Length: 625
Image (tube, rainbow, N blue to C red; front, side, top):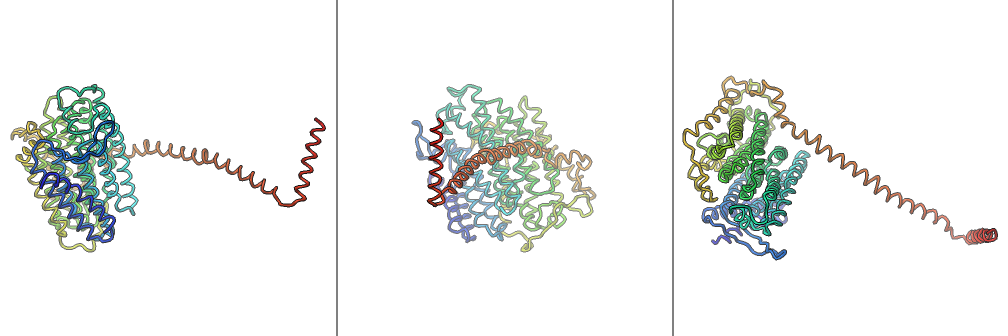
C-alpha cells in the first residue's frame, strides 16, 4: 500500500465510524462499538506501518484547499519523524482504550455515544498531528478540545462532570486565544502557513527575513500560551484534576497520553521557532519546573487514585517542557512517548480497580483486596515502576535524558528542582502502590470514599480490560531501552542529542529514586508503617498541598468573582437599563393607544358634541387673538 492509502485509512476510518456510530447505530451499542474498534484497528495498522516504512525525509500528501492573497492553503498530511511518532502514539493508545472500554462501559446505557465520541477524538487528534500547515493544525487543535469536552462531560447527569467539562473547555481556550493570535502574526510576518517551510526558515542561521528578535519572542510567547493551556502548565493546570470526572478510559486517552500531550507536541513541532526566542525558552523552563514541582506535592496527599495520576500527569508534562526548553527535542519527545504508554497503563489499571470496587479511594481499594485483582496489580506496579524512574523500565531512560539535558551550564538550579520532583514522584508513586498492595486495617490511613462493589464483578478482569493492560505493561517495560531511544533520535533527526549516561552519571538519579521509594516504604510499606505519610507531622503543609496551593481558591476569589461581578452589572444594565427603557417606551405607546381607543366609542352624538366644542374653542381663540 502507498503512503497515501495509509494516511487516508488512518484519518477517514475514525471519521466515517464516528458518523455511523452517532447517527445510524447510536442505539445499537454493540454495532457502534464494533465499527469504532474496527476503525481503531485500521488506524493502528496504518500509523504503525507509516512509522516503520517511512524514511527521515519529510513527505507531503496534500491537495489544494483554497487560495487567499495568492497563497495556496493545502489540506492533507505531513509525514516526518515528529508527526509519524505522534501518529503512532495516538493509534496505539486509542486502540488499547477502545478495546478496554468494551468491558468498562459494558453496562452504560449510552455507550454508543461514548464510542462515537472516542472516534471523533481520534480523528481530530490524528488530523492535528499530521497537519501540514498551521490552519489545518489549529482547526483540529480546537476539535480535539471539543471532543475532550464531550468526553469529560459524558455523564452529563452529574453536575460535577458538567462543571469539569466547562472548566476544561474555558481554561484551554485562554491559551488557544493567545496561540491563534501568534499564528496570525507568524503568517503576517512570513507569508506562509506551511510547517516545513517555516521549520526550514527558522532552522537556518539567523532570523527569517522581516522578523526582529522582539517579534519572534512575541510570537513564540503567544504560541506557548497554547502549550500551557492544553498541556496543563502552571498556572493553567487546575482544569486537569477536575477532568477526572469523565469515565476512566477517557482519563487514560485524553489526560495522560494524547490530548494533554498535544501542547507538548506543539512545542516540539515548532521547536526551531522557540530556539530563536531565548527569553521565551527561559520562561518555559521556569514554568515547566514549577509545574513539575507543585504537581508532585499535590499528588503526595491525594486519596483519590485517579487524582494521584492526574497530578502525576501534570508533573510529567512539566518534565517534558523542561526537556524541550533546555534545548533537547529528543528528551522531550522521548519522555512524551514513554509517558503515553505507562500513564495510559496506570489509568487503565486504576479503572479496573474502580470498576470492581466502586470507589476511587486507594485505602478502600487496598483494604477491599486490591492486590487480588492480579492483572490490575501487575499494571499498577509495572506502570508505577516506570513512572518512578526505576531502572530499567521505560520512564527511567526518558527521565534520564531530561536530566542529562539539564547538565548544561546555567541549568544547575533547574537540575536540583528536577531531582526534587523525581524524589517526590518516586515517593507518591510507591505510596499509592503500597496502600493498594500492602494494606493494613489497623494503620492510620483513613478511608474517604467507601466501597460500592460492582454487582456484575467476576473473579477477574474482563478479557477486554485485561488484554490492553498486559500489552501496555509489556511496552512500559521495554519502550525506553537504549536501542529504541537511538531509533527515536534518528527518526526525528536529533541523533546527536541522544546521550548514553555512564554508570557513574546514573548513581545520583538512581539513588534519589530509591530514596523516595525507601521513604515511602517506611511510611506505607513496612510491617508497622503508620500509613499516614510524613506530612502528617506538618499539618500546615498537608493542608496547603491538599488544597492545591490554594490556586483554585485564588481564581475563585479574583478572576471568577470579578467575572461574576461584571456579568451581574451587565445583566442589570441590560435588563433594567436598555431593556427597561425600551419596555418603558413600549408601555407608553400602549397606554396612549389604549387612551385613544377609549375615545372611539362609535356614538354619533358624542362625535358631534366633541366637534362643536372644538370649533367653539377655536373660534374663541381667534376672536380673542
